[in-house]
Length: 233
Image (cartoon, rainbow, N blue to C red; front, side, top):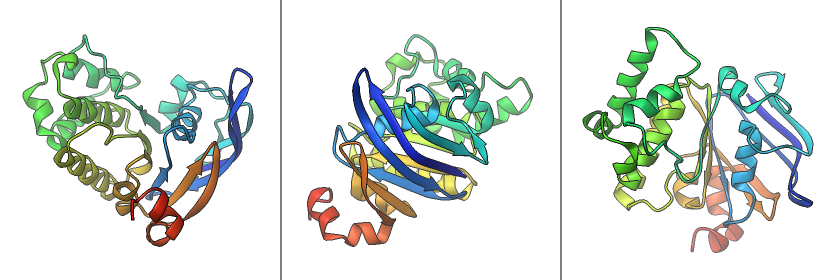
């Protein structure tokens, strides 16, 4: 579904991605793990089009998206739930969700919203509450469902567990598993390496802008380098 070849990106004159190669097959959950500053968020920003690519290609469902504008990629089926949630704090939960569906004008939007509320019932209770008044966990739920309102075939999830209580993290990870069963492909960036790999099919380890390891989730969890560096084992 998604292929990244020799991807490079810079902030000013400083190159932060140094030739990334990865792929995501349809129906997979693929984790990208690594320390803070490894380039994981920049990778997702390049995929969604909000960070310029200096070299390499991004191919999604057979189409070269490398130079396609960010606002057009959602229509191709690629949605991004960004690091730090980035909800519209002065808009209600419902208004945030409707913005997620901005490219659609059909009856299905209401059903999509009900599906979102079924996934995270607390959002239905707070549908008229300003997003800025939600807890961190609730804002993360909103960020994920807002991305899903775009009906993506592939969801880019950036650090969904960051700063959340363990019980909320488990709820988020359970929903990611559920998305796979619903046919949504997920590329998951996480510092919580064990939690991410535990729900993924495959994974990539990034260090300072390069992929240093990749393989099945089971093989990475068992790898001594990953265990000592990222799993605390």
